[in-house]
Amino acid sequence: MNWTSLVESYLTHKRRLGYSLVSEGYHLHNFALYAEQQKDNALTVTLALQWANLAPSGSDIAIARRFSMLRPFSCYLSNIGVYSAVLPTHFIGPTHRRLPPYIFSELEIVQLMEATNQLYPVSGLRPMTMKVFIGLLASTGLRPGESVRLMKQDIDLNRGEITIHNSKGWKQRVIPLSLSTIDALNVYTKRRDCIDPLHPTDAFFKLDYQRSFTIRSADYAFGLLRKSIGLSTKLNGRYPRLYDLRHTFVCRRVLSWYQAGVDVDSRIAQLSYYLGHKNVSDTYWYMTAIPELMTYAEKRFSEYVFTEGSQ
Image (cartoon, rainbow, N blue to C red; front, side, top):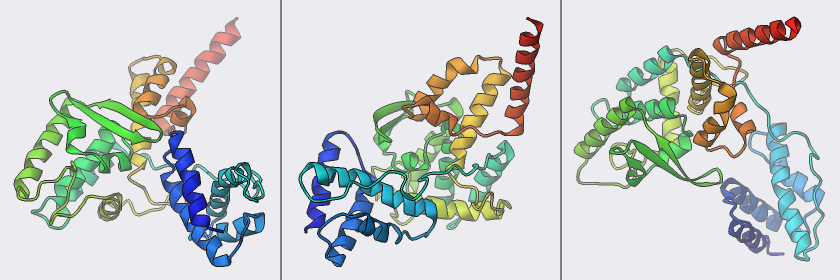
């Protein structure tokens, strides 16, 4: 059984339908190599479990997620006449869980950005790249991966817009920028092009010595910054992450609407589209019960009880 060919056929079929399947493709190719090593000619529950249990973290969530990735593939095999058991759903357990994110205070974001001055090389581009990168995430709510992949042509500072391409099922969405963000990006652009004019790149963010700015390099630098300002305590087994800046953006945006007396319910759909979500429920996933929001929740509930009780 040529499992690699079957996986390629499946991915080609799904991608023609509009699915990107980047992570799934990586894992399915990994499964194909494993199945070929085992010399199995059929996708069975036993084979799927054996491969799922090889999840690097060994957690129940990771094992269940790997097993669930194989189910659509098993359906495809069955449909094209290749002998395969259609794998059951929820066979192992839940594939996702929501760990409470860390919501940064405005002071902590400022401290993180100031701490970038300590990054090596001090006089190089890396400190400024991380400073502007963190500021962009905090001011726009972009996913870290979206920001890392930005090209120069994606950012129009004259119009004050960023265009995000092919992210989470969206072919394109446009993000407006605040004046302070535009100013910061303009300063960064001039510094970036001045430091290394002989090695131009299409990527908006870059590092010293012609190195690419990747999510791995961003996470590593963020870990150093986090430690330097004392954010070294785990919350539910996880350190504060760059991705938590997106959660922070959502909470602060909703809070600002409450403070301005805006009808939040009428704005959620706009926020959802801005964030690149196709379902409003995905936006609520980012909401966290910070004290400031709970104060407004208590106020609204009290008003509701008072109004209902007076009728």
